[in-house]
Length: 445
Image 1 (spheres, rainbow, N blue to C red):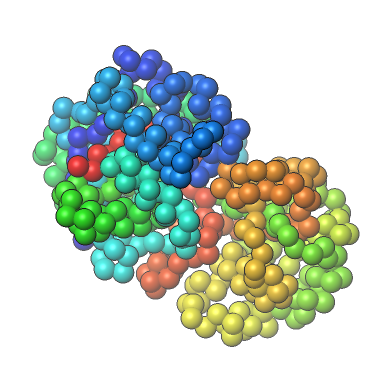
Image 2 (cartoon, rainbow, N blue to C red; image 1 turned 135 degrees about the horizontal axis):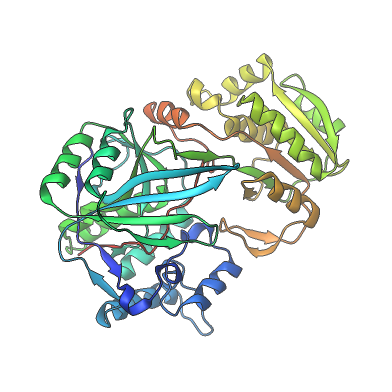
C-alpha cells in the first residue's frame, strides 16, 4: 500500500531571496538553453543552478553536479534555504488558463515510500531512458536531496481527500508565485499530526500512478539501493518527494504531444499511401503547414486514438490516416507482447505500426516533441533548431520532413495499461501545467 509521510521541507527564505517567482523554475527536462540562461540571470540563487547546472569552461567530468551540491550546501549555510520547524504536508494549487477556460489543479506534496515497480501499488505508465536516469542519479548523489517532485495520481472519485486537505488549510495564507506562462502556483503549509495521519490513512488502500517524473522515481530507487550497498543508508532514502493529485480532479488536464521527425528521408503522400497499404485509410486534408490547425480540430472533435494527422514535406501535404481492421490486426501481429489497450493508443499506432513497420524508420533519432498546433506549424516553417531543445534532444538545424498529430492518452488509459504491468511509449501524455521546482526540497539524510 502507498505509505505517505509529512516531512520537514527545505524551502527558500523569502526574507532573503525576495520574490519566490525569481527563484523557482520549471522541471529540468523542459528547460532549453535559452531559458536556462534566462533563469541564471533572473536571480543568483535560482533553483536552475541546482536542477540544471550548466557546464562551465574548464570543467572536469561531472563538475556541474558537484557545483550544484556546493550551491545547495552554501545556500543552507547562509540562510537562503531553511528547514521547516516541524513535519508538513504541502497543499499545492495551480491555477491556469487553457483553451479559453480557467482551471485549478489541486494536490499535495508529501514523501512517499519507495516501491520498486512491480512490487506494490505504485505503477509507471511510460518508458524511460537510461541516460536521463544516470543524469539524475549523479545529481542526487551530489546533493543528497530530492530537488523536484514526482507527479503521481490516485483514485479519488468523490475528491474526498483533496476536500479534506483544502478545508484544513482554508484559513492559511499561501506562498505564491506566478511563472512565465502565467500559471499561479500556491503552496499551503499543513502541520498537525492528526490531519496528516488522517490523509495517510485515507490514501493507504489506493493505487498511485506516476503521471510525470518516471526518471526521478526510478532514480530514487537506484539511489536508495546504492546508499544501502555503500553502508551509508538513511531512512529518508527510502522515500521520494511526490505531488499527489486525484484522478478525478477537474483541473487534471492532459495535452497532446505531437511529433516533428528528424532524419527521415523525404516522402510524398503517394509514397505514404504505398507504404501503409491497407493498414490505414488515407485522405487528403489540405496543403501547407498552416492546414494543421483545421486537421487537428477535426481529429480532436472526433476523439479517436485511431486517427492520425501526417504531414509529408516533399509535397507539402497534410493527410488524415484512419486505422483499418487490417491495421489493427497487423499491430497485434507485430506487437503480441502488448495488451489490447496498449495497442489501441494513438502513440502506439503511430510509432509501432506507422513509423517502425510501414515506414521502416525504427532507428530514427528522437523526434522533436511539441504540444500545440502552432508549434507544429512553426517547426515546419522554420525547421529544426540547432542545439538542445526543451526535451533534451539535440536539433540539427535541418527541415523536418515528416510531422504527426496524435491524440493524447487519457487518464483512464494510464490506469488500464498500468494495471496490465505495461508502459506506454515515451511522451504518451503531457500533464499541463508542469510542477515547479524550488517550492520545497526533500533532504535524504
